[in-house]
Image (cartoon, rainbow, N blue to C red):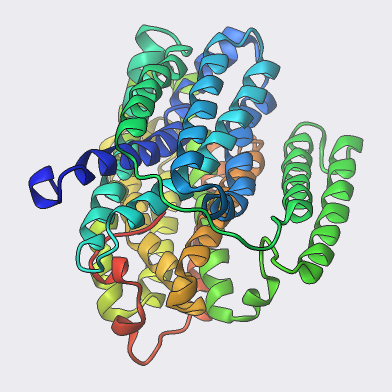
Length: 463
């Protein structure tokens, strides 16, 4: 879509909103190929490197649902610009971090900014294009630009970390965010604020505590065993916080997450499948990135290029496989896509060691990426179908949160395994299990095309 396709002023605003989504996804992928350099530069342990990835993913996951509600209350423009300020400031702190502890804390603030940016950027797109005939094309631009970060992240991270050092991957964000802020103040619509019940702060705090304690337990369990004191303490805190979260959500007038939705098998299948997808893929990506540099001796750029076969099919296929979902329903693309991705990871595990960075290894990585490209629209559509079109926004937010939670757990769990073969086999198992659950639980309506959200019918996706 170009400015000539839209009324004056909406094209630049759409570009700014899309840039925000690009920033969020870029920092999911760009850091992985720099982890080895971060570890050597700061003297960080493997568990600290896991937290460098997970601090961002955890806060992003925990803040997503609350940020969606806050966008309605404070206005999407205000939340988007505030998120950019937090994200850019935290990026500068990451770049200047004197040690691993400061870097981890700054990454958490980055995740907070990202949690504000992601739902508000999509809300801005919907506000800019209220006409159902125009909106799918606009969301296609938004999703396409954001998806390009999945391909650019590993390569760009390799170039910057290899030539300028790992701090450059965070300094890069600062001028980009400043440019987006200037353009955003000039172009983004102000919108309106919503009134209603008070935000569910208790649910937000307890949910965040449960997730953080669980990831802490998994990382500590990888170091000292699951029966170690820190791991058991983390598990205990996670259980108590989760129990409190359930009680609070059942009593809240406007809960952060309505637990009754999970009584619907289709909704549960779509979200468990989404969580297992990111558990396997991001956990495997963490292990692969370190292995290619630490064990195989590749430079950050070489490691980034070796991972392109995984990211390229995902970014290229996702906008188009929505049409497949529109024809056959959500269940088969979600289940078969996850299973194909699991086969790809299993193939990479079986070729083993030095053969990962070879034509055979690249082929299996491409299968894994293509499977995800097919599965993502099916998982999002399955979640939104289960709750109906009037709840498509919150259903998409829950699905995206499930993915981020799964990714954080995957990095903590798979990142602590001793060998690359074991790590990738575990990734494959998670993906195959997700495929089985999606095929088993996710239903297919009698008129799958008409019940799908418009953005899926037109072949584009939400986050």
